[in-house]
Length: 488
Image 1 (cartoon, rainbow, N blue to C red):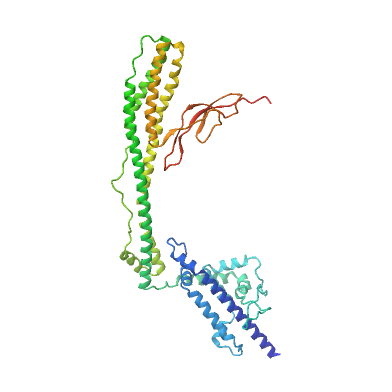
Image 2: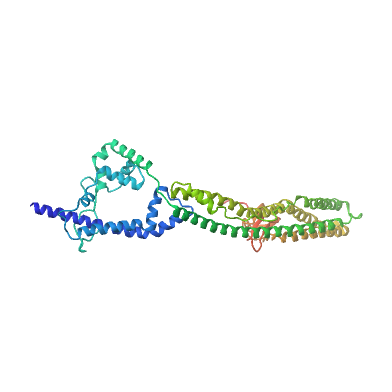
């Protein structure tokens, strides 16, 4: 009877050992697969890894964890392959002895970085948690020493489940509170890992390498922004030069308008005089254009980003740190400030180019387009003077005025084309395009559907160049159809 009992205990212990060997090798294989990700995460410049995981990542990256697991599996397998379990060594017996609830809970808390009470809460709130006395199920049997699967093997270990299911843990809050205090005191007294000169040199070398690579990228981006800024500046200069020429030509055209003939009928004279006053006002607006131009203020040369950190300065920072983690953090903080300084240099030409474009478009919208609008309105109001009832003298003078409006408008449209700005094309008789048009007024027209464009009350403008996709500078104002609702 006693012999059978001993044999059963020996078989159970042997099965547990081989379950543990298989589990250790599976974990080792998983760690080996995680190695490249650990290396990449440790090498990330802006790593968000918390300090308590840095040691585990380093062990994963250099294979220490994998080797330890494999060595442990081989050691256990070597002890049990012979099947001699009658007198196991004392150290092996101690290693395989049950873990107390307190020790098990402390191990889990230290590994996870959580408090003991937090670990207990997590396990208690986990669905399908085993109850006291229940075994933990497993799907597939693990191999025994001969490679044959064991169909009815017990679980490898239920120490932690038994721990958190123990009444002493579940019913006595002071037990968990004491473990929390013990855990916190252990964390506070943990000594930082020592690091030597080779580790310091490696940290500095890697940091300088990253800094130089980032600096090269910043330099390339800065050069691109400088080129774009210079292209925008040259475009603005060409526009303002053409605008100056157009203004001078327009003033010359306006100055050549002849005086009002004496034989113009009184009824027509009032209309013609209002057009002449319009031309005089346009002349004043043109003369004020030059004073409204925003000057282009750019530096003669741009400062280029440079590597701020030096090997000596980074060595000083790293040497003063108490651990490799602290050294790495301080080096990154120092180089981060250098990165911000470089970023400001990168954005200077970019923002300068944006400001030139913004000032240019604002000038066109606020000062130049109103002049062109006045020319369009003046031409619209002068056309009725061509009617025969106004007489030949009035008709001839109206043609002169219309020619002046057209010639001056042509000069300013020429200036706008130097920066890719043109009049938006509006097709009357088609539905309104709300991307480039806006309704100014509506009229009924039974033969056309609602929102059909009838006419343009104010021109719209759009800009498009080789480097700039089409965009609306100003919406066209149109009159659209809106028919009354029927009684039905």
